[in-house]
Length: 270
Length: 335
Ligand SMILES: Cc1cc2nc3c(=O)[nH]c(=O)nc-3n(C[C@H](O)[C@H](O)[C@H](O)COP(=O)(O)OP(=O)(O)OC[C@H]3O[C@@H](n4cnc5c(N)ncnc54)[C@H](O)[C@@H]3O)c2cc1C
Ligand SMILES: Nc1ncnc2c1ncn2[C@@H]1O[C@H](COP(=O)(O)O)[C@@H](O)[C@H]1O
Image 1 (cartoon, rainbow over the protein chains, first blue to last red):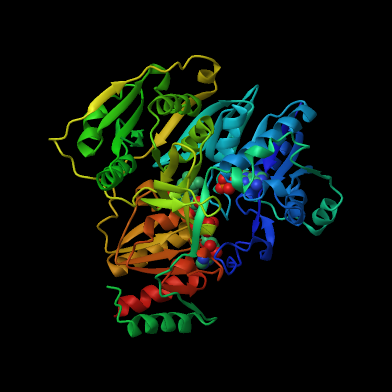
Image 2 (cartoon, each protein chain N blue to C red):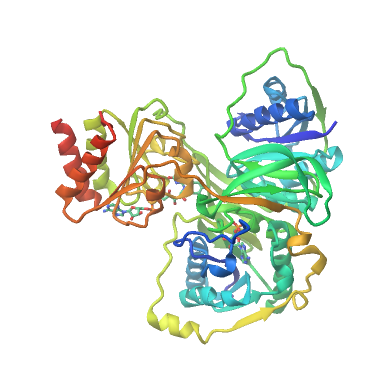
């Protein structure tokens, strides 16, 4: 029988590069290279392990500008079967309520095409927005149960999953009815690294692009002007740390240099 | 009068600290700007907690006490919260940015069709003029939060939709003292929680550990992560001993079983502020950083020069902990 799994993948500005700002203080997203959200690799890995154990298909879904396709190829190279890219100028600047609405409409349509969806997996948060909202909000629009911060899917049974969720002070094990939305924490799954062959194969996999109209989205509910929240100011976070990074191949010298720095700053460790 | 509501999370039979912090912050904002403070208490057998919320600063407590809420079911909890909020129409609704708050609040926002800001490190009240229309909004919630993994700060408002919802990071505001002289109103609600949602989520097991080691008073903490492994922890203990400090750990190290939960630092562990915090083989995930970022001096030892932990460190040692730690411990012992 197998599982039909949808993985939500967000293309994000490469977190290894410092964010770029326009002169007016807003983020210059076009100047930043897009990669797959690092947290989404855990969700993709979870999906791949479930497919390996139980069979089925994995469809990736993204809402992003057209040039995000390269970032999606990373997920395809890991093993996602095909992608649906929701891309439309009218979606630009959507906040989490609007984004989750748009994604949920695309998912509804994809759902009727696939006939059945068992699991919708998300990363636990995105590296650029860090909201962790989209998973539970998509579940809200689709009226499905959701579990955030899943450490591991323990069991898949007839119409349910058992999952281990991280909480303050430990874990909780939940039995959740399918279909369900899970957001996967970066704790237990180790994302695989695609081989060159995987990368080449990924180039031939199908990426379908949908506009707002294709997905049946009400344009008056999306985009920057129709989003309830509004970013009114952004600024670089002030880091009040000394940031003295010591790199040195010879370990004796390394420790010496470090202790010298401490001494210079008048710091004693005992 | 406009109202600020706070979601009162219940943990182990009492109101969670992170919610008390928010009641305190709401009280402050209410005093300065003329709001009243309401608390939302949702669960089963929770009526006994109303006094505490009032004594910490709530003017009224709205209670949904229902056997259907005896264990945590996100669908039913979201429904209960949304129904009371619809009826009471607060201006502002605050949730703690706990593992519960961060999944419940966005779901409530969808039910109410309003905006939400995640994981704020400050909430203030202020005015806003929409540059496009020139319309002025008074006494909005300024929602201030880090994004881009903490490298960028953003200020966000929700001008036209109500309530303005935000989750606020635990530990940023102090828990207000109890004031036994305060009085307030308690209002009981019954919400229809019947239907299929009840069967969608079942709690099979809760594994929570009680804390025996208190790292809060430690002056020096040497913490180990996934990079350390069981062998690395021996070296970490030796360094801690040489410095007269305590041993801490990342969640990854705790989950791997190399050290008990007592020692975990971070969002779901302890928040510590020692004079010196040494992070060994810890990458610097935000959930770890929030627990140790207020340490006076932060030292990181990691073999990956790109590890995010170096961004919050005063001193970063790029190297293999298995080589660096023995040498460092030896040098420090000799002094
Ligand atoms: C809801 C939630 C709550 C969480 N709560 C917490 C929390 O309270 N506390 C917490 O810590 N985490 C928490 N986490 C987990 C967090 O997201 C990270 O997964 C975790 O902090 C990673 O631990 P780590 O840095 O030890 O491991 P990793 O991220 O795997 O990092 C290991 C590091 O060790 C380095 N390393 C490896 N070998 C060596 C060597 N020989 N010498 C030197 N360096 C080496 C590597 O370069 C790497 O940087 C939480 C996650 C979620 C979703
Ligand atoms: N634009 C998007 N397209 C597809 N998935 C997304 C998008 N934004 C967020 N997600 C998913 O939701 C998770 C949480 O993202 P966020 O709410 O932005 O922190 C991500 O890890 C993705 O799985």
